[in-house]
Structures are given as structure tokens and as C-alpha cells.
Image (cartoon, rainbow, N blue to C red; front, side, top):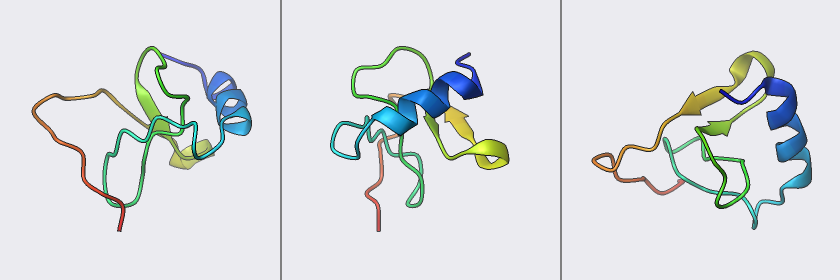
Length: 63
């Protein structure tokens, strides 16, 4: 699993346009760079979310 410090660096240097955007809910989307390895992630600190892509769970659009 990717460490929080590594994710913080990825988030800091990844623009919205360059982020993965694998949508998890209407409120969160993956902030890791497009084409990254490993789990998707969003949020900071104690609100960090991580999830695996599930082919049977299609993404939903942000509202």
C-alpha cells in the first residue's frame, strides 16, 4: 500500500487535469496521477480514502 507521505507528494504535484479521476462516489475522485500503479486514493490525513478499482462497479459522475 502506498504510504501517506508518498500520496501527499503525488497529490501536491498532480494537477486536477492530470489526476486519475477514477470516481468512487459523487464526492471523491482519485487524486493520483493518471496511469498510476496500485490503489486509488483521495483526501488528506484522517480523511484519506483508498480503494481498488472494481470492473463491476462503474464510476459515477461528480455532481
